[in-house]
Length: 53
Image (cartoon, rainbow, N blue to C red; front, side):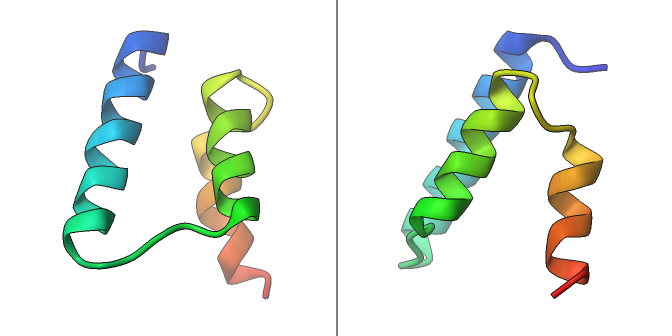
């Protein structure tokens, strides 16, 4: 299990990678990321969400 600090660092690295690729997350994605960082959603939930669309 990742610590809060590890989650935050992983999120920063991921979003920086997206920016380098010219991608910007939409509002819903940012809200989902914040919910993950706050412990309201699990990583599994975030991964499964696009699969349900």
